[in-house]
Length: 125
Image (cartoon, one colour):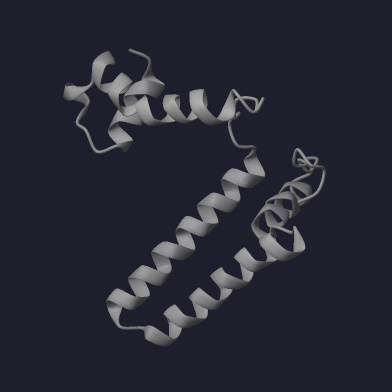
């Protein structure tokens, strides 16, 4: 079994000694049904792996969510509220302005290191 399949099974909470092709097939049932009933008839192409700026933005969102949860758990409510406000502002920026701050930050870091920025599929971040 390929390492990517084993990693997917581990991410779903199963131990690696339980991993086999039947388990992977069962876990992938819903995505296959959605692809068969929704995506193919409408002519959508298969999704590719996320580009690096998007992965960076997803990691930042996860880090913020973790910090918010840890702040609530630790009793730092004011800190949690400030982080929630930043989280909401970032999400609103993506929805209403078509601008992703973390992806822009990723490209800023790349340009400071001397690498060319990576454009999104639509051409803007």
